[in-house]
Amino acid sequence: MQVINTNVASLNAQRNLNNSQGALQTSLARLSSGLRINSARDDAAGLAVSQRLGAQIKSLNQAMRNANDGISMLQTAEGAMDEMQNILTRMKELGTQAANGTIGSTERGFINTELVELRDEMQDIASRTNFNGQNLLTGSLSTSVSAGSTETNVGTTIVAGTSVTALDVSKAKAGTTFTFTNPSGANVTLSDGTNSQTVTVVAGTAGSTQTLDFSNLGIKLTLSSVSAETADNIAAGFAASGNDTIVTASGSGATNLQIGSGTATGTDTVAISFADMRINNSTASQISTLATALTNFNNTQSENNARTVMSAVDGALDYFSTQRATLGALQNRMQSSVASTAVAAENLSAARSRVRDADFAAETSALTRGQILQQAGQAMLAQANALPQGVLQLLRG
Image (cartoon, rainbow, N blue to C red; front, side):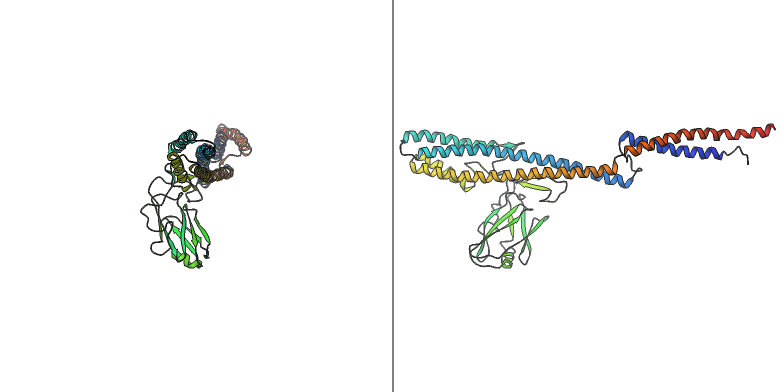
């Protein structure tokens, strides 16, 4: 059958040529961008997966930078404490010299002059140490119990024979009421209204102590018992009126480092607090004892007061060492966080690459195939367009 109105062979050649051209354009787009998925039409599900992975990777990379910034903050505080400990060491040396009976009041006056200057410099170092405008050693980055709190605090009796002997809220959220809820057996649950954590109490015996660490909420309290008491009774005591809340003071509170890509408190964030190290303002007994000893020596420069300074310096040195050890442990924790986050980001990047990146070996083969099909298709289209001309032979006949 010879027809000229409809050239089926040409239409077929055109369709195949258009298909091969579309495939060629896809290969060119993938090779030029390096991506297998350049738009949702390439792979809608794969695009959604890769976009979510990409967001998580960027978040993890920022979390690593956050952790490194936290390390820098901790190093800044510890560096200041290091110099303050050097000052304490010099104070111990001067106290030892002043306690010696071979020197007179005039020489002790000279020693006192240096002690006063060293004390003032300790105060100034703590006051001016800051990171990005935040004072580190003035207690502004530490949470405390609200002055108006009349419930769970140091000295609170939880149940007969068992009381709170230490309460650390330095890493807790400021201006928050934490409530003990739903005691179950020996389990105690503490909640801030959004997050909660449950710990298990052990039975108390005469002279025993135990620490309840609500680490996710930044609260740690120590219980001491003077007589035997069951764990269930101690746990139930936290729900009693007057024992069921801990209220923190309003203010800046502890610094929270976002070291993960999620929002879970205690796993994706780390609270860091810095104690008040100012010698004239600190509530730490070791530092306030030293301040008192230095004042007494300034008033009466005697051998006994010099020995009191020596003893007070020893206590302050121990306190500074404890604080520095805490900061050092946090630095090591942040280093581990950076390392683990880097591994997670690397693995997620590999997963995203498998979903979205182009396979150049496969795409170059597809490009070559497409180019050959284009050339062949164009040739066949030309041949198909020439077929109707055969009808002219019939007309000439």
